[in-house]
Length: 186
Image (tube, rainbow, N blue to C red; front, side, top):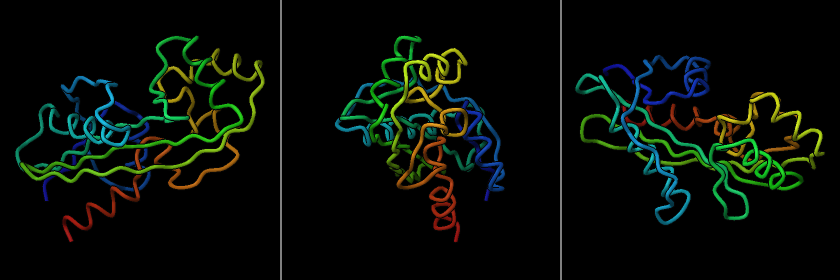
């Protein structure tokens, strides 16, 4: 088995793989992300994960390339990374006191073989005060995270429960990645 290459600039995905002992090398991807919904949020994240993996830069032939894309979906609306503080504010107000889903598309590519799958976790949020939302936005933490919060950071204070994979909410369902790699390589 050749090395595993993570085609992602996400420090959280890198940390998750390190945390569970999956050796990997981080590489850039030339893939241009688009938040255009193909036919469903699941199809979109799976297509983006595959695009990232296939466009990995500097990966030797025969290597294992891992790509991933995570979104938050609330009442049918896809919430990516906020573009502005106002965008983050709108997202956090929408998520307040409600349940949303976090969907991560994952692609593992080895040569011309592809394994593409997704994971969905339901996250329950407490009702947030205006002060909580404004204070959180002021930290800058929500600006590079889908749905404008990070469960592994200060955003954890608002999560009253989850149904599904915690690591999926962080950005990569490592248990599912591990199981898929075991199936591929025995």
